Amino acid sequence: MIKGNIINLFTEEIYPVEVEIQGGLVKCIREVNEEFENYILPGFIDAHIHIESSMLTPSRFAEVVVPHGTTAVVADPHEIANVLGVSGIKYMMKDASTVPLRFFFTAPSCVPATPFETSGAVLGPEEIDELLQLDDMVALGEMMNFPGVVGEDPVVLEKIRLAQKHSKPVDGHAPLLSGADLCKYVGTGISTDHECSVRDEALEKKRLGMKIMIREGSSAKNLEELWKMGGDFLVSDDRHPEDLLHGHVNQILKKAVEWGVDPVEAIRMVTVNPANHYNLHSGLISPGKMADLVVVDDLENFNVKKVIINGELVAREGKALFNVKPAKIKNSFNLKNTSPVDFEINPTRTNNANVRVIKVIEGQLLTEEFKANLEIVDGVFKADLEQDILKIAVVERYGHNKMANGFVNGYNLKKGAIASSVAHDSHNIIVIGTSSKDMSLAVNTLKNNQGGLVAVCDENIYSLKLPVAGLMSVMSAGEVSAQMNKLHKVVNSMGCELASPFMTMSFMALLVIPQLKISDQGLFDVESFQFVDVIK
Image 1 (cartoon, rainbow, N blue to C red):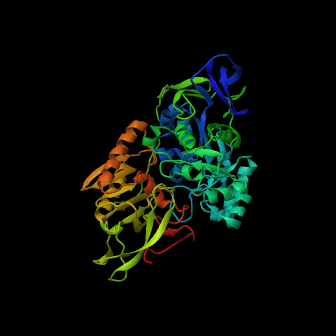
Image 2: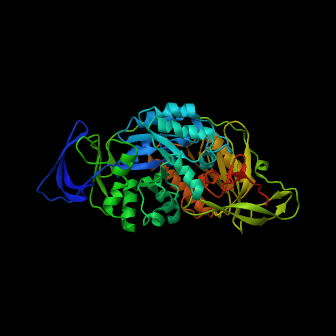
Image 3: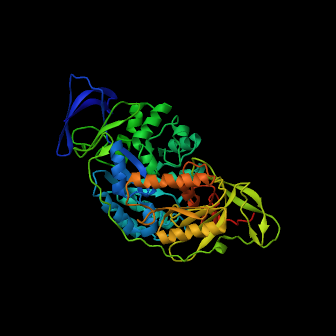
């Protein structure tokens, strides 16, 4: 029996009740003549998240988010799928099954995300059909290949058809898509979008019937821009462990209310709305529904006092009441040691030349392109630290010995290099640095570590190992966060002022987010969807 002030999402009333629970379900709700200082809410649902981006295994992720009131997530495992295919997805499901948090998954629709990068696996229609038949697979994951949808690629359309055959919704991913192309995209049955970065974009999609996911993650933060327009879900998409220690969906709720969203509407966006869309047996406090409940102190701060999943108390006062023992999985890195010369760009001319540069935008996944004039010394381009033009490279890790070099602006490093095996979505090794020597050292360290994050500063090496697919650690969020904080301090001492330098770097390889990105195969213009030369 749980007592408190219920937020009734049917009538938008608030009144004191006692909630009777039996067999993991809500049995009855009775109004009582008592006064309470706490509020009973349906358990929070994050309707779009990539667990791998937390750098935690599903069980470790549950350990940190359940005390914040998260009782269910809809997770797209396309990060590990790009590395290990179906076996990676089944690892996520196996590890998730060991903890109370309800994990629902979406079948990754774009593995690889584009044909312009090298991944560790390919998921075709046959694999998608197999995955969509699993009980916990509630949708086709975000369709990032919007050019394939608009261009009527038969493989892409077949995956959408299979989702419809299994009566599963199709999640979208169409940044800045507009006009006739957007109509065609929506017309295939794609029903959500979490990539809106400006109000006009979100409004156009909403007018066409798309459900808008307002994202507030560690790197991409769109709540401030979009809340007045209104949305259907509040989601995190990608969230780092140091942020998860402070909050998850409850923190997004707090921000939404601070900006001006009505508390009841905000609660709908993380409970009944996602439950209805993905056909989950939760999201409401109603007889016969899953007894997944959260007790909070008020409707402004959303400080979580108790969390109940399946009728059982699973967290109290910020502490998980269940044990975690992450499953393990075989890892693999198949690449040769690099040399400094591998990170040089050799132009045919001997004087200065103009180059294309990826411009980082703080707090956004979007990048811009601009032109810079760089000096050529001894036949190679040199980074220009005064202009903040640094070297960037992607080194393929799946045994094909591919790599590409380019230039990036926005990191402001004055020395050293940073590298990561988290590089969306194919998760090859990405590295940014001031010199080829330091970049080579960083990449070789990652190879020896079998994945993770590395910073090279004054010939000293700092690292966080991610032994699960090169994406996740089996350590707790606190332990991972402590190592991340140490890395961030090192990177900050090197001159970088970005809030999340490694997560931001990981999106420099994401070829489905405009404008200029880089893969192991070259510099890529997302708007024209083709490779471009570094020299402009």
